[in-house]
Amino acid sequence: MNKLNQLPSVDFLLNCPEGQASIQEFGRELTLRSIRMVLAEFRATAAKGEKIPDAGVILRKSHNKIIEWLKPSLLPVINASGIILHTNLGRAPLSTETIEALSKVSRGYSNLEYNLEAGRRGKREVHAESLLKLLTGSESALVVNNNASAVLLVLSALASRKKVVIAHSQLVEIGGGFRVPDVMRQSGAKLLAIGTTNRVHISDYENALLDSPALVLCAHHSNFKIIGFTVEPKMVDIAEACHARGVPLVYDLGSGAMLDTAQFSLAHEPTVQEAVDAGADVICFSGDKLLGGPQAGIIIGKEHLLNKVKHHPLARAVRADKLCLAGTSATLLHYLKGEALTKIPVWRMISMNAEGIRERAYSWKNALGLGTVLPGFSMVGGGSLPGECLPTFLLALEVKKPDQFVKKLRYMETPIIARIEEDRVLFDPRTVLIEQEQQMIEEIKHLLS
Image (tube, rainbow, N blue to C red; front, top):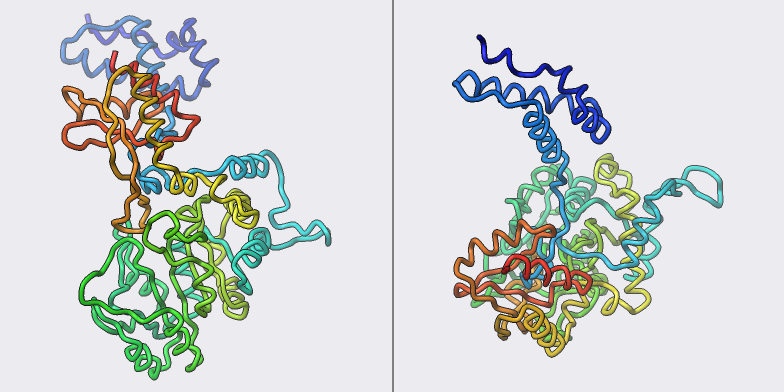
């Protein structure tokens, strides 16, 4: 007798109580697809002489397969790594008010492109533009989907098939192999590199400006340092040289700092306001780095230049959606109201008192009943303030197999991201949100038990 004939039919499996329950829970199409796939797998094993399973086994495997299919791949995690702007973990966590703004605008319809006063179609860029102008003192502003898009759009709109001056020291590569020279080529701009890797003089800019370029691009090297025998002109001097020749200066600022990082014993990160005051004509920066908002690329600057940017065909392809605009606007309000340090998680973490962090680390130790509290360092991360660290206190756990332990942490109900140093598993309170603290302790307890 052919063993394959012993396999139940698809119709039988669909119509038995377990099959009907699966249809009720997941729908007929998913249930049917999973049953067929499981049957095909058992036909293959039966052909090799293995035992034919009963209907219950088949349906349980079908159910598990559907669960695996529907399991979300994008999950909230607990960041105990001590890296504040962790690019792999989604960079900046959002403020409560920003999350509420996202929720409110996504529940139903919105006036995204509708002018309520006039009763007709409006423009989406107005929603964040007025706040950016008020906060930075710029003439005009535009929000797009990320900073790489912002730079690409500006170059495409202002310098396609024209020369763009940039210093050799600023031909940077950011995450994922994304390089400034590649962006410039994609935009159609012609690269005119000046100076050397470590030394660029104002005379280099002045000589290049004699060649009548479309613009000068300055890219803040926010993810690395050049030290030693180095020199670069001040932004105000570059702007003065550009304006003397009637050439726009575009500044890719990157991190989007609105507050002075030096007040927290970090190196000074150039701020957006400083770039405006220095005379940059167009400034691009990220929304999800030191600004502390959702992923966005923000462009501010002179109105006559941004009008060209806004009307370029690429602007529609990289435009921000209603969630990005709502979240960015809510984040900007924190700065305007002077509450960034208390409301925006990134700045709350940067400004944390070391003694407060120490107390949290000891409370974790007491809750677990083991571990050691050690002094250590947190990092800003996210391509901002390279090499800069903040003093912190860490909870260190000594376990037999640290690599396996941190792997198991990543497989908890809410994954926990820790780090290993000197065969100890370290947890940094600076980057663990208060509302996630108890859950993290319970999951570590469960794993240790």
